[in-house]
Amino acid sequence: MYDLAIMWDWIAFSVRWLHVITAMAWIGASFYFIALDLGLRKAPNMPVGAHGEEWQVHGGGFYHIQKYLVAPENMPEHLIWHKWQSYITWVSGAALLMIVYWVGGELFLLDPTKAELALWQGILISAGSLTIGWLAYDYMCKSKLGEHSTLLMLLLFIILVVMSWGYNQIFTGRAALLHLGAFTATIMTANVFFQIMPNQRIVVDDLKAGRTPDAKYGKIAKLRSTHNNYLTLPVVFLMLSNHYPLAFGTEYAWIIASLIFLTGVTIRHYFNTMHATGSGPHWTWAVTVLLMVLIAWLSTVSTGETWEDAEARDLTPYEQKYASAAGFEDAYDTVVGNCSMCHAREPVWGTMKWAPKGVYLETPGDVARHAGQIYLQAGLSHAMPPPNAIQMDDEARKTIVAWVREARASE
Image 1 (cartoon, one colour):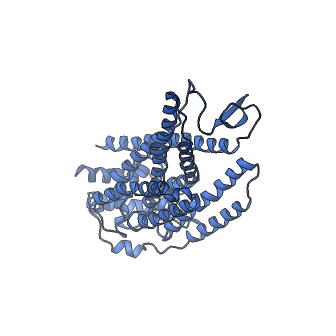
Image 2 (cartoon, helix red, strand yellow):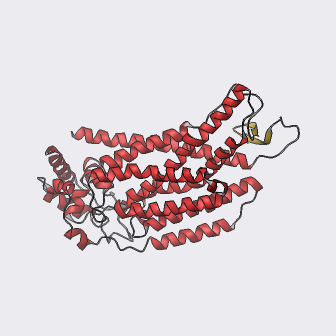
Image 3 (cartoon, helix red, strand yellow):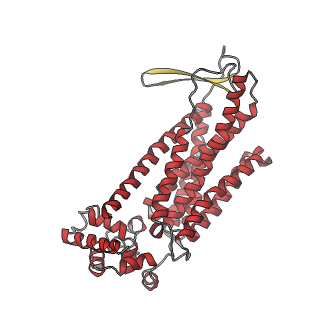
């Protein structure tokens, strides 16, 4: 049983690693092709149908690239499709969400101080909500709004703000921002799967059949690809946000997440303009800095759960299982004595203002709730506490291991 717990953690790590690798490949390809597209120039003696060309140098060689706005006259023998980076990023991300936030939902997904939900209800909301954004966005793109790109992006931003607020009403801070990132990433991958790739296949089939491809399919794919480009940076921030309590652990985390989308727009607008014209609008950096100052200020405003609130709250069934296990009192004393100076609602270690990763280890409910993390971080490994902060002896770690194993043996 205990080896299975360790193996499960390694599975989660492996899936996360895959997710990061494929996300890097997808983001890199997306940024490259947007920059390539914006840097195309007209040149004499280009082939029929060519829209522009570009010369690049890299890795000791020169590359000559030409783009056809619709399609070349004949189907190339060797055609590379850029799609698997997107698909595997989403699939691995969905798997990681299930591993961390569904299997570990009682710890990472549900927040009993916000909403009294059964785990199955939280999972249902988690899974169902990811489809809402795509359906609404896709409907708007296919309506007359699709002809007004600025208005379309504004409406999408409003949807994201509403979802950010909604997630923060029911999920933990970490889960709320992560789900907003997954919500947005689902739109991006669905763009590739349901629009960009099918439209490109239509063009390829027309070429093979000797028909003249319709230019509208390329325009649709370009619109969706551009939207993905502007959404990328906020998604990266949201996926990394669980490492930063200042991002997810305050009352106004939903506003912070919303403002991050605006910084993504300003940053990408600068680079997209620079790739197209050779010079980016510097005002975008001033706006980005102001937005980040506002975000930093919002992160200091907290009206979250106090120590007294946590002490008075009834334990959930998950917490009760660990709190009632043999050895809990000794383990609780060990954790509080070694960890609570940092993992507190008001940390007393150095200049620390927020508990690392938003994990509190003060009350019996806190310690019981985070039993799995304590087991891995301070029981089986020496990851915590930091050795330059406190030296936890082996007997203390054995106390933690024995407590958690006793609790799990009763399952």
